[in-house]
Length: 89
Image (cartoon, rainbow, N blue to C red; front, side, top):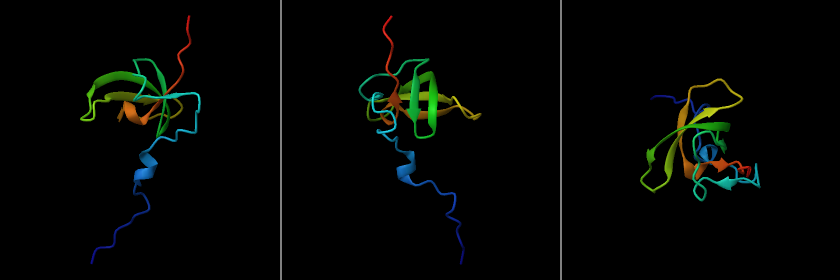
């Protein structure tokens, strides 16, 4: 019988953004992120580098690049990110 190692398995709750981490930031489902926006995702702080179509639920698919960590860009739904408040000029 095979013995599976679950130590590196990602749990569903690890993929959800913590809405309490930045209480003054808004959900990407209510405010559409644009290229260059700073967002908070399940992996940490990131910047939107590209908009890549829409998901089946109507939310945008974002290509994100982590700010503090050297890693390859990845994709996330706008519904699962918090968008930093935009400063009015």
